[in-house]
Length: 248
Image (tube, rainbow, N blue to C red):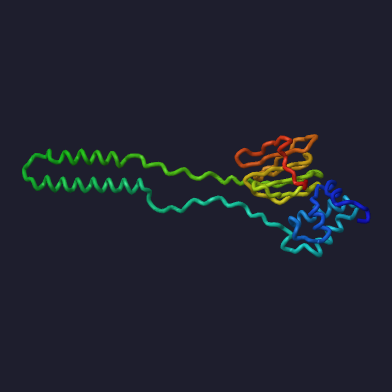
């Protein structure tokens, strides 16, 4: 207010939304994304106003940051579990039933042949043929079980800044995971999990860590955008497709 600077000017300069700037001024910490972003906002805001950002961050840590918020846990997405084995398959039960029926037919045929006295042994031939027919059926290959479900399509993503870089990161539901802020050299983000990410980078001074593997960004004279999924990996976005986290 003393410098007669409007909030909209600071918003355009720092890429921090006006609602977050007002929350910082009013110390309404519950309206901000989390401790990691609060400290980043404080440093960027202080630099724009010519204040001591390190002192502001230290004051926030002493008076407002709880010990439980020092580290934000990342809960990994759980892969779907296969149902436990429920017993013998239907093919196995059917084969056992056929074999049992063949044995029963053989016993009946033997008993019938023995009760006929001195008759010829040809009476037992039909049951023998029947036994061979059923035995052949019993050795057929069991039906294939349904294919197992595919692996989880969730992908993990984090960023490590090698220089000052603007970042806007949007998840699969359209939620802003990194709401258009500037990362400082050496600063890293938490690991985010989603089925799809859309990201805008102000320059190439950042390393993208996708599913634990670091990926560099090619130098560019303009903003860079990517789509990141499990199936297609990292795909570049056209200039008109880049997400934006700055209020219109």
